[in-house]
Image (cartoon, rainbow over all chains, first blue to last red; front, top):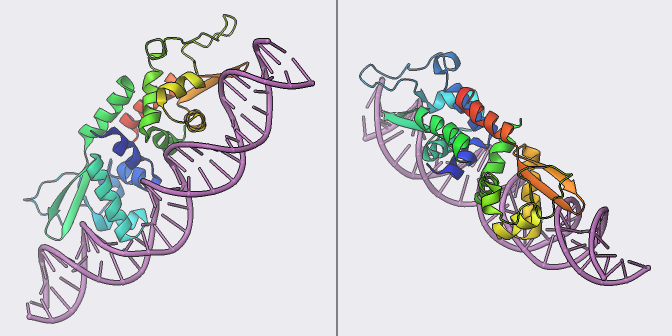
Length: 104
Length: 104
DNA sequence: TTGACATATCGGAAATATTCGATATAAAAT
DNA sequence: ATTTTATATCGAATATTTCCGATATGTCAA
């Protein structure tokens, strides 16, 4: 867990929003999973386009943000066909909270 | 609590180190409290010069960092004479961990 | 096999952060 | 009063981040 990269990834309102939206994907992305067929199980995953629409930033920016958040460990992704689905990495987020409480 | 400012303040190795050193001031700053007379009680406070020495950055940089961390809420300070003592704001740090766990 | 679609990557302009030395301020000591 | 000491602030050079449009890549459908 690269602590600094985590904090950097969290230092932006849009990225923070994405993380919060993905906490309740069915609430914030009603058409969620539309493209995700049964055989690909990736619960809570939302595709880039849906996130972009909600984030109101350019496609390249959102793609960049998601990639950055994944590299930091906040998100995990799966590619299915032409879509990439992102969801939260709850374990890392939880570890981060624990780390702040005990080590920082 | 301005979340983004907190994360920005934490997105730097030196500032992170300062926060960790101030977790155990007597361990990391042996001459701690040398200037702090009894009547000023500010437990765990360390003066800028001592922090600067350990951080190995310029005086202006460290002063800037400490100010930034205080504005974000991570630190609190007291001025006594020509010295400014900084210490951790444990409540905010704890709240941050809680917030990450529940709201992010 | 061509075209449309989803996403990723590239290149760059603008904004912000980093970090310093110089200088200002203010208190302490001489 | 003057000098020294501790810290804050200023101004600026450099590095990094933000964010976009254009383009590339890969996939699916006709």
